[in-house]
Image: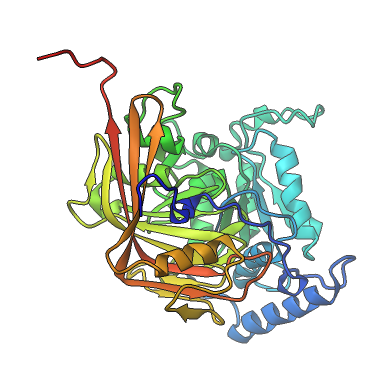
Length: 447
């Protein structure tokens, strides 16, 4: 294929996916008689109750993680229901889990917390079992009676720490992940009393969820900021300029130990950013998970397993094999890229993928390709093994980046039902290569 053509496969991280409309039957809620809960909530309550009560009180195991990519549709019952269900696993009474919302990252702490409260209440959770941890850095302009910037030291206050004592699910709202770190870690880099109690609660089974910034802080290494074009051609930590914001890295809270998390992955075109961020890590750490908007990765830490819920995809990028990465100028050779969608499961150690039931293995290009993901899969299947789509992307006047997506021998494509509110394609073992070229700004003279 000519290098000048923009192959659709390049847009793996650029897909504009439909918002989830969330089947009511997939929703979550614990009070089926509450106004608005309805029969679907009763079915979920019965399912949760039978599953957890049959096992008796929750055993001491690490809580699950719900890592959401941001911009979650209020109607996404599957995602919010997953968080409620994971909290219910820990509750003494699985029909009445208790929640704490942490708005530390938000520029509108009270408003963001109230929005999450609304999502839970609409799914049958009683308002009185939801607490808001008063931990934040920025005053919410919509609450003139309260100055939330005074919550800066909330992570050291006994009143806020006590809210965790009965929490079965703790949710971090979005905003700026640096604010979460600034409020929950000490100046010396240790855990504040609130974070120490949160870790203890998590280790005995409480679920932790977060969206956007609340997802970014989940891993140990953390992406702080950066745009893909600038990240690929400028040094890590450089100043922002005409090309955008270069990559900057920090330290997260380390709940997710299996790799590096990025979020808003599809809408903000962050495949390049994630690839560059892996280059800033040691070889054994170069495993990334890019979570699309309106989508979550639900992680069973103890069993090293995860599944995808929601409208988009989770892109897994494995660049751990030695000799496949150059830091400056950045180059990545034959990293393994896998794209998981709703219902898919993955072993976080072996990276073995189990596609969702109902998906079928596709061996030839699809005849029906109404969704962008199906078209991507079809184009991949049309390639012979070892062949690649290539594209050169100019960045400013003095740089370019070459991309290559190749069909590996083990590449597989699974396709599910064509649903208007869900991505239904699973791509396994695509080989991604990226090469950055930076030209001198000075014209070359004659020898």
